[in-house]
Amino acid sequence: MRRKKAKRNVSQKTGITRKTVIVLGVVVLVVACVCLITFAPRTPKTNELKPRTLEELLALPDESLAKVDIARMNLLCATGLPHAENIDVDKYLATLDEWAKIIWEDNEKRAVAYYRNPAKYENSLSKFKAVNMVLVIQQQLRCGYNMELIRSGAMQDYTSLRFNEDSRDIFIHGLVERQKGSCASLPVLVVALGRRCGYPLYLVSAKGHPFVRWEDDKERFNIEAAMRGTDIYPDEHYHDWPFPTDEEERAKEKFLKTHTPVEELCMFMHVRGSCLHSHNRFREAEEAYTVYLRGFPESRFIHGFIAEVQRKARWAQ
Image: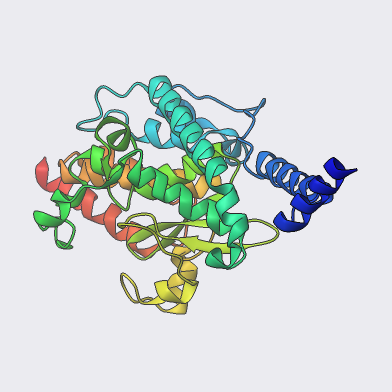
């Protein structure tokens, strides 16, 4: 009797009962299960298409492009450009798969912190995943903006094509090879890695600036990834930044629209065209710019670029 009474007194003093322990155990188990479900990595697509060359990629019909990994698409669009001579597509894709595992594992570790204070992320698990993913890319994978583009003035020089000279700055192979990129490549990396984690991420364009959007049947928000840290801005922010636009221009150029796979391909071909243009490879630049019209038939500025390289090609003859 004394021994039983002593045990009862200890329970009363500590406030811990067998029922409390069971409840806490159930809570921990539920949180762990939620984490496993919500942070599970993607399963590979069984119907994924794997074109081996840029020619094979461009030959695919629009409806088939959704079956192509956006990272493969971007890497193929860089092939043949200056500083892209040594691209190994399969090797680089395997690296991205490993990076995605690092992101998933980090999110899994930090999931409990989210559930302790969801208000920090506006009670949005999706925003937690997006923000944490970008921070892992920057802090653990060490991928970020090539500051030499800023120091040299290339980023601010809108009168030349200096910004596009080095393909490593504007395609994701530069991020794989040397962890440096720009606003042309960092959003692509985020989308490629996010999709590997099962996140509904897409590319979106403002005037002169691509960014990332999370969009599913529950939430839609924009993610800035080409900066130190990250931020979430509403669409209205991009009406005037980095360049002002009006409603007509936004409609014709498809600014602020969630891009489809064919539009993603066209964005990469525009970047390819700019790189070729900067190296005076005018006929190849014209071919790349022309592909852009496949997804953006009403674009005014791309018609201007096409006319410019045609004129320069005539002068060079």
